[in-house]
Image 1: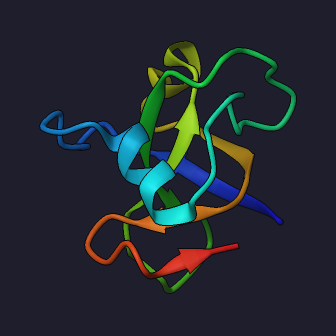
Image 2 (image 1 turned 90 degrees about the horizontal axis):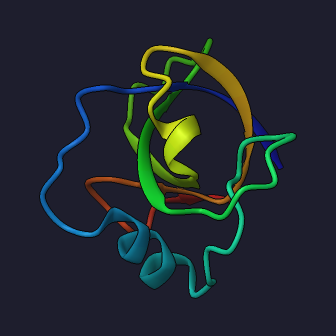
Length: 91
């Protein structure tokens, strides 16, 4: 599934968010999930869905370059893992 997201600057720096995503999904984060990027995933990025009434924060694997584009909107492939509830996953 492809999701339109906004990258959040407000993400919490405490903890390993990439590992959080891997533990929740049971998958290994190899590549950046931004559509069109082929870099290695290094960060668990905090994102929100664009044009949605759902204001939850999610984690998605991104490379550091894509994760530093704060406030930018772009497409990512799922799954997305909810920051508050790791069982809430958008596949």
